[in-house]
Image 1 (cartoon, one colour):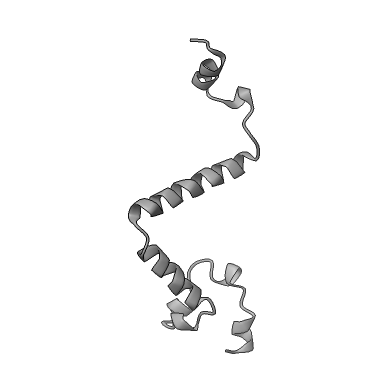
Image 2 (cartoon, one colour; image 1 turned 60 degrees about the horizontal axis):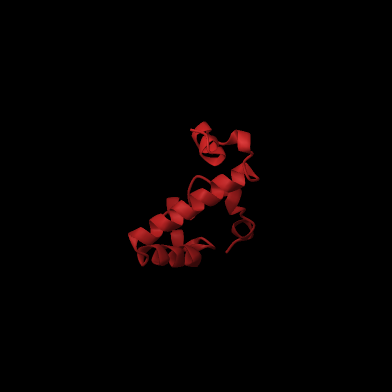
Length: 87
């Protein structure tokens, strides 16, 4: 591997896709083995489990975006009414 390839910052350089794959040589990517393992894991996981993982990730992402437990006044009106016993 050349010095330039060893210093490649994949987060910056490969953000629009794998450069090596575009060049027809994906096996030269330093992360090729990890990619193969990840692909095998996905292919060997049931669709239902993949959907569960996606939902868990979406919930975690939403909670991280909130940053904290929502304030009472931020809750939808119907939830606030239910919690206070109104209506």
